[in-house]
Amino acid sequence: MQDRERGKNIGAKRANDYVIRVVDDPSQIDLAQWNALLADQPSATPFMRLEYLRALHDSGSATPATGWSPQFLVIEEEGTLVAACPLYLKDHSYGEYVFDWAWADAYQRHGLAYYPKLLNAVPFTPVPGPRLLARDVASRAVLLQAMQQFAREAKLSSAHLLFIDDADREATQGAGWMMRSTVQFHWTQREPEPFADFGDFLSCLQRDKRKKIQQERRRVQEAGVSFTSHEGAQISAADWDFFYRCHTLTYRAHHSTPYLTRDFFARMAATMAEHWLMFVAWRGGQRIAVSLIAIDPARRTAFGRYWGATEHVNCLHFEACYYQPLAWCMANGYQRFEGGAQGEHKMARGLLPVQTWSAHWLAHTQFAQAVADFLAREGAGVENYISELNDRMPFKATPD
Figure 1: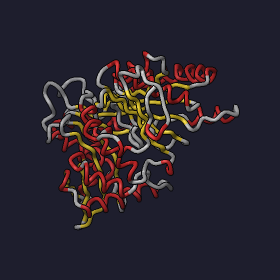
Figure 2: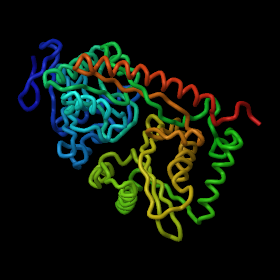
Figure 3: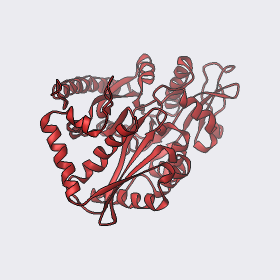
Figure 4: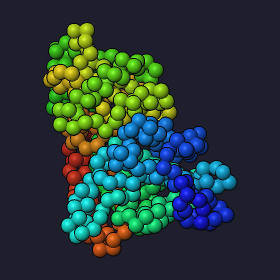
């Protein structure tokens, strides 16, 4: 038994080996050690950097007031961080992109409380990657055991890991967690001969797909729209202000408000500027739209994130969110562009289906069995869906 931050205890694998703490404020975790642990994960993304997670908390975006109560797990051995993960107590299922509303409804109909639940995820960020940061297989197993023990001791309904990588999937499957899959659409650079540029990429698409993209791009050009790109420190405070205005307008159009505050993006500009790329659309000397892309220069990966516009221009969304970023990726030697959650329309634009995974543990035995049966049926449907998608790839079978 070892100590927990704020005075409560959870068990450790062996008291002489590990100190296991639950921390309710990410600023109390050593940033250098967390990020070093992340860097050792083969599928690391910028969204698991501690600066990103701290910014979500400190900006008021993911806090107890918004239904995200941080309970980060950290495991230390002789003062060195050997495993860690971002945990949240959730009293709703917003901002997750893996939908369990039906499970919550079933609990409620049977007089049981589904919330709060325990969630291991990056808030509002459906990007696959490591969720159990660990030095090795053994420390990953201890971290997962500690997470499950935390849920049991707190008498929570369930625990969930969202958008996990292969190492986390192996660990959770081995521990008997239920697996759930979804589909995203990613662009991957051609091998062994990379696309030279966007024109080369277009030439490899089927004729109808190529013509559609050319028509969409032409409509934007004929509307008098041009683009500038701004990377890292080149993104000014005025650029960030304009972006957030457009970001808010997008949510307003759907009768909602942004999850992320303006202060969150100010913190990104201050602490993670090198991980952001902005495309600004101009017409008549005025900015009219913007898309914000996250980038990982070390791993040559880009991630489509947010967009917005002050006025409607036909096909502008596709240009800002897909064609400009894809052209930039090809010009800058990037190997992958992840288009975000869902969106089968992305496939016609050269982004191909990729299966993503989440893991789930439910304390209630009968509900766990019912969910397992549901996931088996749902999983078969996802497999069939991916098979159907693979039968209608957008690329030509053979070159012209």
